[in-house]
Length: 353
Image (tube, rainbow, N blue to C red; front, side, top):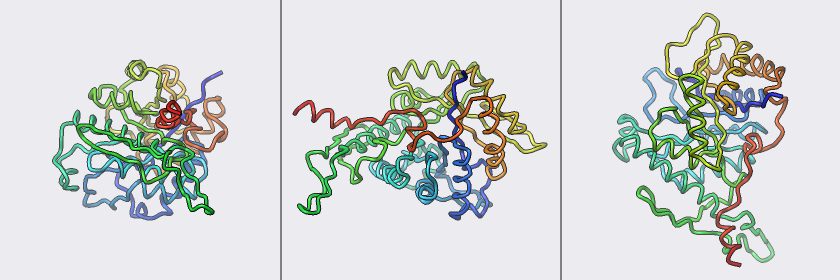
């Protein structure tokens, strides 16, 4: 019996976004269609670089996905949030809020901003070497996890008769001290429905070691970019060996162009050009060759290609027994088969009692 795939799709698109992308109906339609295809989750990027002169501009991905969350029921919502020009306290609260709004379907695609143009656009700091930025991202991921844990699950009392909202003994200082951040906590948002929204890291097979450290020690899902199946298998095995007991889900990135008569220009990584129905056989082949848990599909033109994925690819994968017929759980962790983690502070307190 073949092992079922995990599937994710990027809805940002790599080309210029239409003017409609500044409206809620545009993103709602894409998200609802992806949910119709039962994708585990979707990703939406957040580049800090100024939009091209002929571009329509961009909206904040966390805010966009918070807007569409109440209009969907099952699909995971994973915005990219850079750690370079933001504070981990604000990032953690924004993602915890998204997890509440979506009833447990939020994730976090960790990104950094490394260009001088992005640094100038924000104006807080100069650009820095990639190794420094990814080390900072690892610290930000650690801070966010501690802040999500800083409220125990039963910290909220909500007793109107006594006027008590929280049990202060079940709120904890995170007391993080590092080279990039000093954060005391606790969070201002109660513990998210998933405990901790899954952390997602995009990783190239030959990326800097600091990025690999982030993926191995903090990622629940790794979006792996590799030049060929052999490289993907080797990178996956090295990552899982480095991760130890954590064992993140590994999804292989595939850049797509499903439009007739169009071929993708040469780019690094795995690419597919052709019919969506033919893509099913290719994914099955790559699945066997690499051992990955699934695929992160990146269409070139999302408005044209997402319907082809939902109505062409997904039915073929189901016929082959490679994809579920419907969602089996409610949360993103359910879809990925990831347990809900307990608060690290609850363990410590119980040990002292």
